[in-house]
Structure formats: structure tokens, C-alpha cells
Image (tube, rainbow over all chains, first blue to last red; front, side, top):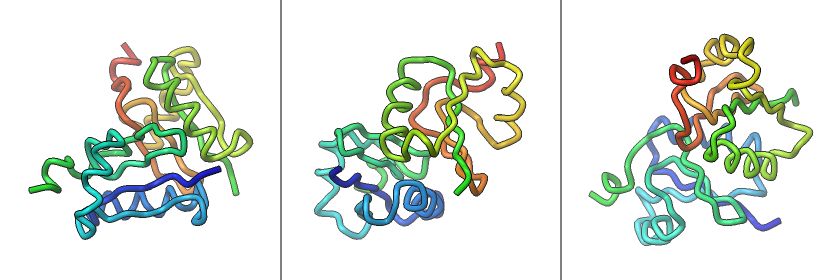
Length: 77
Length: 77
């Protein structure tokens, strides 16, 4: 199985969800990307269908938005 | 690890998320509950902090709301 990608922006909602997702899916099965810090990956997230963070993009390409931390528009600033 | 519980109400958003979650977490690690059909479990979902479906309640008790299908208020009708 290829990895899922968990996009977040460092907000408290994101960090809480990150722990849960890593526990559920397994550390080795998910790449964690902070698009607040690694801004070069914002467009990659948008292309994957991410509208808000935290979000998990599954190996089959679906974007699952988890709870609601911040709109990607706000992250772009 | 105890099981997660995936609450949904049969809507298209829910069914799509259900497949993704089962693929990620593993069929044996998640109980799927349709609170549109099994209405006796609506109060259990509410007590777990579920505000909308689809939602995943993790073994440590966190409610992760995934995308947005339907408010639990609308499911209660």
C-alpha cells in the first residue's frame, strides 16, 4: 500500500487529529506535511482536493477533511 | 487495540468515506454503525461527541468528523 499524506498547518485541531490518525493508520503509513511551514507543498495539497486542514489524502487519491482547523485559503494568507 | 466506531447515515459522502476508512484502518479495527437505520445508537454517538456524520470515534474516545455528510440533528429529524 502506498502512503497516505496528512496535511496540516500546526493548529491545535490539526495536532490532535495528527496523533489520532497516526495511531489509527500507523506511523509508517502516513506522511505528515505542515503546509504552514512547507509552503511549497500548498499547491500539491490543493491539487489533491484539500480545501481545509487537517486533511488526509488516501492512497487512492481521496481527500478526507477531518474536523475543521483552517481553510487552505487562510493558510495561503 | 480496541475498535474505532464509524458512524454514518447512509448518505453518499458517508459511503465513500466508509470505504476509505476501512481501507486505512482495516476492516477488523472498525465497527460501522448506520445511525439512520439503527436509531437506538444515536444517543451513543452524541455522547461520544459526534456532531455530524460520517464520523470516526477513535479507541481513545476522540470524535473525528470526516468531510460533511449530514448534521446529527438532521438524522434525528
